[in-house]
Image: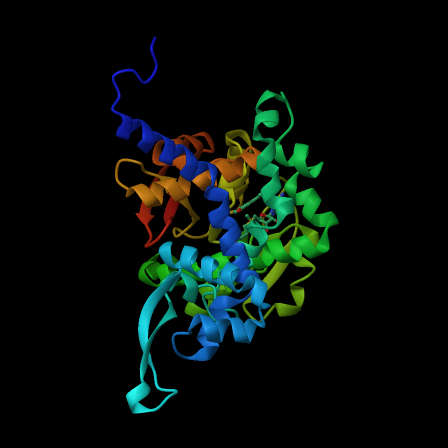
Length: 364
Ligand SMILES: C[S@@+](CC[C@H](N)C(=O)[O-])C[C@H]1O[C@@H](n2cnc3c(N)ncnc32)[C@H](O)[C@@H]1O
Ligand SMILES: O=c1cc(-c2ccc(O)cc2)oc2c(O)c(O)ccc12
């Protein structure tokens, strides 16, 4: 077969652009990391108005030899939606000398990278872009041909949870990253508070530092929340317990504390189908028999290529590749349904949340 014969040259060059775009996509990640390391979103936020390149390099104390590097970083990030380029009137020289200048303003994406704010995704980006985590994905080819090892076992020498238990600073970064993602879910949960109404207790399985539980317990102060996670994880947070929120250490494959509702956020996507069914069976055992409100609530991505717009599916499919690190996966509704039936659940309902997540209510 004569490859590319009959193709117009402009079509072939479009193909080349497509290949190069994906080949160099890692530089998008590196520019994001660069901008976070320099804390540019926080600098612009503290500046309280759009910032000129001159002002930015002076705050950063960039040596003259690197000024063009920062200018090109800002051009790249502006082109990619992290900053708006706006025209400002510089009044340094009095009325007659008023000069028009370009300045960089925050967009929603860079507002989410301002340090210390309620919805700050910097911890997520820092952890995901830590070479220890991201370099695993250089080994996907090797992983494909290895019969039994997971990608994490090849790259980190062990499974992720064991690796984190032996590397406390990365465990802290991982927990902070998960917490920053969970904090965002608050925006979507407000519209679905009805699923938590009338409950007495909830157990947040794999709940990390309890961010989601704290959000729910603030919404429902009478609800008793248990954050359940591996013992070495919860031992870092038991000091943050309160009247209605406690931390319990254990292994979800052995036993999950009893509650009206079992919550699993970003848990099932970490595991293959066999492990998911085991987790779901333990969840079913944990759901209190003394209430008719008993259910499992799952917050995860649901792949829906037909309905979701291209960019949303692209993001979910990227996370699906990330989950190969521990033989996990992102699932479609049909794939979730199969797990629920196998674990002995009777029915489920999916509520797409604003953003990437869906909330799935599963009935025993
Ligand atoms: C991807 S994180 C999700 C954290 C949290 N639910 C969130 O979304 O912010 C998965 C969590 O599962 C916990 N985990 C892993 N294996 C576990 C096990 N066998 N029993 C209990 N928790 C476990 C991890 O420690 C981690 O906190
Ligand atoms: O964004 C991630 C990345 C990982 C990850 C990356 C590399 C490894 O060798 C292991 C894990 O894990 C994640 C995860 O478990 C999760 O629930 C959400 C996001 C990510």
